[in-house]
Length: 119
Image (cartoon, rainbow, N blue to C red; front, side):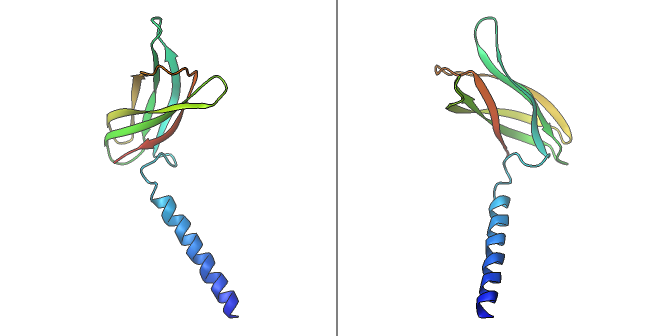
């Protein structure tokens, strides 16, 4: 009986730890409150590369700033580097288009949003 109680207590503590750990990541993109739609890696006729998209804020409050973390990959899908794109003044329940030139001398051909960070 004592072992059964100890196992139950351990299971409750593990579950609580997982819930708290998940809550600590609240600044990252999660659920549908913040999302990047139509993300694209583009190249201008002059050869400059940029990452564009639309940041959607489904929250009930405006965001003064958000950082979009984007991973860059080579032709084989191997990670090259990560960049952060700042988007300012996103109204509540609205969206803002963004475009950021990518200043990198490393070869990459793919990009993917990893997270959206907020204060």
